[in-house]
Image (cartoon, rainbow, N blue to C red; front, side, top):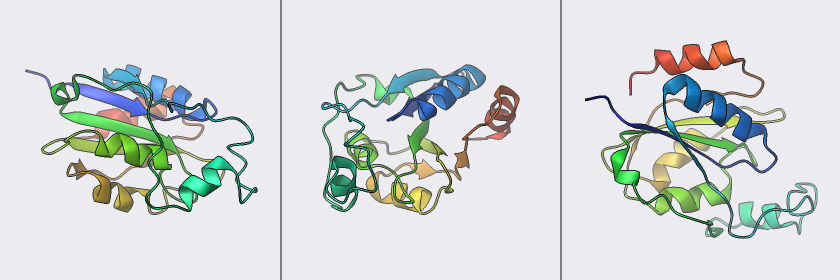
Length: 158
């Protein structure tokens, strides 16, 4: 029986969504969007404003923004591709909420990210602190072509 795969992603501006959709098609995976209960506005995402919502969340290690909707069948998935934009060189606070919402013991998490200029930073290391899954090395998919994403997905042995 084939292992069931999921691409779960958070996308504030649509960039990560585009990569997630390509990856789900390439990997033959189901797709789930991690949506905030309170959608982010442009002002919320202004990383140059020390009082913007995203800045406040990222500066508070205990921040766990609420998620709109939960995946009822998480136990069906062996491999979870987890996508997010890089915020402050790591995962957005809402991704912490997502990971801590499920028991991912015995699962494999494969991170992927998008960014305007930074790499994965400390995100892969930090993911391990929020869940008990096996974390594989991640990949930046900013601007990746369909072929590059297919090749990467095919190369993984979760």
